[in-house]
Amino acid sequence: MANNKKPRLKDVALRRFLSVVSVTLLGVFLLIFLLGTNSRSKDFVSGEPEEYLTYSYNHSNINKKINLPKQSELSIQLEKLNQKPPRNRDLYPRLPKNHITIVLYVHNRPQYLKVVVESLSHVVGISETLLIVSHDGYFEEMNKIVKSIRFCQVKQIFAPYSPHVFPDSFPGISPTDCKDKGDSSEKQCQGTSDQYGNYRSPKIVSLKHHWWWMMNTVWDGLDETRGQSGHILFIEEDHYIYPNAYRNLQRLIELKPEKCRDCYAVNLAPCDVNSRGEGWDCLIAERMGNVGYSFNRTVWRKVHKKAREFCSFDDYNWDITMWTKVYPSFGDPVYTLRGPRTSAVHFGKCGLHQGQGEKNACIDNGVVHFDVDNVDKVANIKPEWEVRFTENQSGYKAGFKGWGGWGDERDRQLCLNFARMYLLEDTNTSSSKL
Image (cartoon, rainbow, N blue to C red; front, top):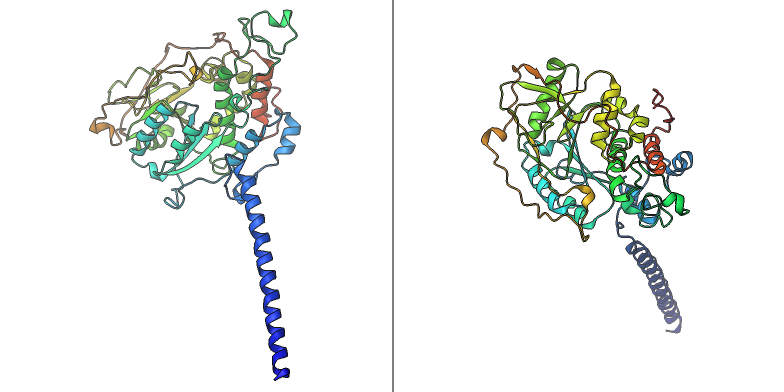
């Protein structure tokens, strides 16, 4: 009997030992998991799979070479988010090879963004393309609206050097910045004034910074688009898009080489934002507008080579800068091709610079109503139409000195740095090195 009990006692002891080891290991793993969860919970943009938070380029080397502003923790997190792949790929796993990427650039006007997102949801063919939403900084309500999109693949990018991301340093507001006319001569402050004697306003310069950063990032920085040579469509958060917009865009791009070989772009709307089109039975070639415009990589390369002209012109508006400084430098007239009926409408009353949540903020509930006729629900561009050229149009032209707001040398240098960010080439001149 005694000989039979000894092995059993050993077995019991072994089982107890293994149980203690198992419980201990389980506790260690649980502790590691909780610590990891706690560390990630401190980050408002956390919870993203680690494989999506890797850079496709060596940012530390880029920062050293072009001296970008020192990044805050928020700026770094936003740049990591930019590396995430598009959402909704499970719903739309394959896009046509000839799809036209749509880029929607936004600031902080959620009442407007809801309108444009709703209009996009009714666009025929929207599920065939990739929608890239470029945010000027991080605003939670805007982020939630974009995350709710289910009608196509969606990729979000956030401007990591937006003034809105730097609350107490350049490119945001710095304590040492000059603020009022004459400050530089009376105070030891930092900054150079514009041609009218005014110093920089971060919420104003963010308009031009965001557009230029977005263009460089979309064309040369994103895995999804830097290999694309064809057209990309650009729209804003206060552009109402008609159901036939995408199909009309496809037709215009297809017809442009035949109908208007000298046209640089195609537009969904007239350059006159108050016009809904002429209703003629012909195509129209006119100066490029800023509502629903689309061009290809060849045109982008021409624009990129003019980084010096773009970044040095004293006007905080990107579109006025293009009209008065960049396009005229091409030599030939810069025409765009469009249809006789609009497929996109500008509806915003509040400018980007007027902001939200301020004493003098522009108030607009974003309620709009457009009569969408049956003809606006299907492609209405006819391939047999001829082209009517519009010459001597009114508007900003070469020789206009600009509205100012863009005189600070720091803004101009940051702008040039954006042009070098992905190509790491010299932009000190407007030569072909750009």
